[in-house]
Every structure is written in structure tokens, then in C-alpha cells.
Length: 531
Image 1: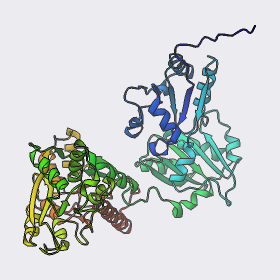
Image 2: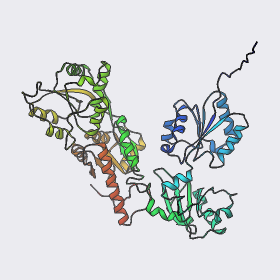
Image 3: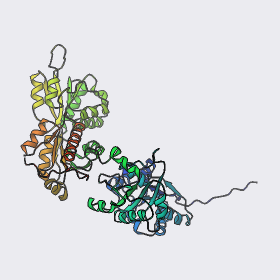
Image 4: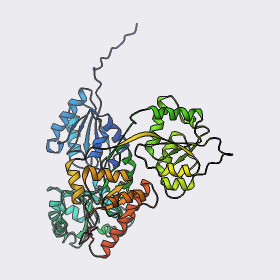
């Protein structure tokens, strides 16, 4: 006769407490596992307030505590343990790597005494990440040794001074002078090259290159503040050739992106790749037409073969038709036998995502005029139907209709969506627009120009104005704005690229004029141009 052992399980299984290294603080440098755990966490404990990008990774219902740096390690460990015992996943966020620095090991040791399990998710040590972004290689064949340390009062300064030729220290800016003096006092040569980087791996990063003897003065003159990474050694000399992060064409530029909220993401991501700080301000809200009757007839006409062509002039038009199709249980197969045209790269891309390959995209200017220039004239022998469906905004111009009519086509202009002016942005955004708080503003349509001026006022004369095409340029000039940049083709990617090229030219001009300060943001000329 065998016996069966019954094991009692707690009502809430106890998950391990997870310590996640967030690297230097840029959400893009977080590990994939770290991001997944943040999305699942019921409790998130951080040293200080999370920036917007990290906050977006946290579940909306999660409890977020942002003052751990001000509390004893044992107290933090106690709150993590309480969450775990209640069945809640607790994630402790630590700068850099959890085990590079004193704080992480102290909290883990305190947690271990409670008998709970724990997990470490490594992060990029801040000293390594920041040195890489500053263009200082820490470990190479020429510099085969590197020392990492925290510049604390009880550090072994004699060992640090006589240690590896390349030394990377995490410190507060206020302590850089003392740090340099102690290293010199204990034998490090005063002319040793030094790179001091604040705001590492962010768009506020700034690096000062100096020597141990002059570091305190040079850092003070540069106006640096906060925490920093100090790299000492001959590796610093390679920064002139290897600096890449701070030399991006729009590094630190604040760029206003006035678009509909759901359309700004791709443009903002491209701007970030150039080093800019995009600020999205919706100026247009897209709403359904007041009456669905026109769209219902258009969809029935598509299915029944009423049209020879369908012309999409915007992403919103594609979205409107797709949503209507989904309501009726239709898909891209309903376009069988219908020719499709698209104005603009993004519009064509949205069609392809829907499963529709456009037959015609303008070869030249990506505008209504460009489409008319390439559109075939109606031929009563080869074209069995002479009707063209135009699902567009309620405020669309007549250029396309008149051009296609002259080519012999009968156009059915259908209101697929309405564009309405968005609510005004917060007061601080409006003030920044008017006072020159933005280095540049990107306009992607004539309506964004009119709506931004209507809800927030005109951008300051010092702000670079970039537009996507001639119609947008004309609308900007009608509002009294000086246009500085125009995209080579009508796409948001080309617009961001054109602004980046302008940024490179502005930077080079500032360097040649001796006005380059090395600070993030657009170099400001001595006198602001007037329109």
C-alpha cells in the first residue's frame, strides 16, 4: 500500500523579485527581457522618476515607486518582498547593470535574508555605454586594459592612479575636480587626457575633453551638471576620429512635429535617428464623414465593378476604405479588376499593407499635379468604364478632379473622412513655439500650417521651417513664414532627410565661423535673420 504526500500550495505563487539593469537610461538600450518584464510587472521600483520612453513600457495599472535612491537598501528590499509574497511581480530598476555598483548587491543581499528567490537581468554598465557614445574606445589592441570604478570617498586612489592606462569612473560633476586632484596626488600624470560626459546616451549628452590638471576649470566653463562618466587615458585621443553620437546632424535639436497623432510616430523615429528631440503636437483630428451614405455607395460600386480606377491621395483615405471594408466583411480581393493609384510613398505603403499593389504612383512630384501628369487619358476602346473613385478629405482641393476631367474621366469625389482642427497644445508648448523654444518645425501639409498657426500661433523667426512640397510652402508663406527647407520629394522620410542635410550645413557653417560651442541643439547665429 503506497502513501501519497499532499503538498499545500499558497493561494498566490511567489514570483521571483527581478532586478533589471536599464543601462544609461535610454529605453532603446534596455534588453528585450527587461522590456518584457516591465510590461508584466505589478510593482516597479526605480531610483528616480522614469522618463517618458521607459514609462510607456510599464503596464498602465502597475504601481510605480520612484524614490528608491533616497531609501535604505533594506527598506527597498522589504517592499519588494511584500509584493512578491502577495503574488505580484516586482521589478527593481537599477542604473547600468544591477551588479555594477554598490546599491544592487546590497538590496539583493537584504532580499536573500527573507528567503525569497530573485533574478538578475543584466544591463549595459553606464561607464561602458557612455564611453561608447562619447567615441572613446575603452578596450582595444592598443589599450588592452581598462579599469571601471565608482569615485567614492573610500576608493583606493593609489591603486586607481597606478592601475590600467585607461580608467573609467562614474562620478558627480561637482566631484570631478577632487577626483582629478586625487589621481594626480597619487601619481597619475597631470597631462593625462580626460573626457567628461554628462547626459550620456541621451540627446542632452555633452562631452568635455581636457586633462587631469585642467578638468575642473574646463568642466565648470562648459556649465555641465548632474552625474557623469569620466574616462582617463590615451584612449581619449581617439575621440576626434570616433565621435559619432554628438556629431549626428540634428543632435539635440528640438523639432516640432505637427501631425495627426497616429501619423507622427514614423517621422519622429526617423528624427531621433538623426539625434533630434521630436515633440509631437496634433494639429488635425480625423473624424468619420457626417453621413455614411456616400461611402456605402462607393463600396457597393467597387464590388459591383462601377469604377475603372480608385485614386488614394492620403493614408487616411486608405484607412477609411479599409475600415469600411472590414465592417462589411470585405478584404483586398474586392479591388479585383479595379486599377489603383496612390499619391506619395506612405500612401502606397499603406495600400501594400492592406494587400493592394497600386498600378500608378507619380514618377515625379508626389502631389495631385504629379499624379495628373502621369495619369492615362480615358480611351473608349481600351477602358470599358470611364469612372474614377476619389475617396478623400472633406477639404480636398479641386486640382485632381479638374485634371482628371480634362483627361476624359468622370470623377466621383467621395468624402471618406473629415479633418477638424485639434485642441490647442499646453501653454508651455505654445510659449515655446512663439519664443523660439523649438529649433525647427516640420510641416507635412498646408492644413498643418494653417492649423498650427490657428491653435498655437506663428513659430518664432529663429525657428527653421521645413515643408514637404510646394502647396505646403505656399501655405507657409501665406502665413508670413520664411521657408528654409523643402523636401526633394513629397514624403515624410524625404522631409526629415532634408532637415538633416540642413542641420549638417548649419553645423559646418558654425564650425567655420568659430561659433560652434559643442552644446546639443542648433547653433544660434549672432543675429537672427528677419523675414
